[in-house]
Length: 154
Image (tube, rainbow, N blue to C red):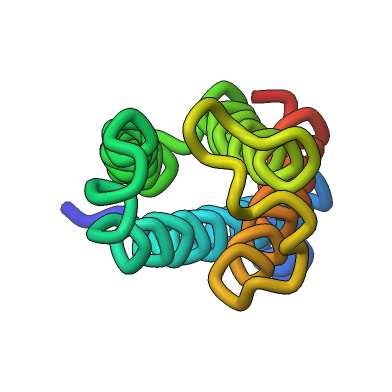
């Protein structure tokens, strides 16, 4: 004995419609994915810039070389967190890390660092300038991701 069920065309149409909240959540998830990739790639550029400048720091000011290594490691950990987990806190950490590097750049160019006053006033040094631009971009993208997280309610 077999039983067949039929649905009316109204029921069929109703079941294929996507609720508006699901569609907006999907759009937010796509935007968050784009921000995750953008922040991760930008942090990789920040780390790369500091890797390029690292050999000179060992000779000039070893403590800054250690700080660069710390920044490179922190960037790698933050990249991992942003790509794998991607919480608000991860994006805030990316923004904070970049902001700290910008603060260090400003201090280095205004009053100088101990045993490192040669860059005072050297605002247009290519690697430093590139680093500040990319770090500003990280801050912007990370804060947009935090706002998207708030909109999604996560």
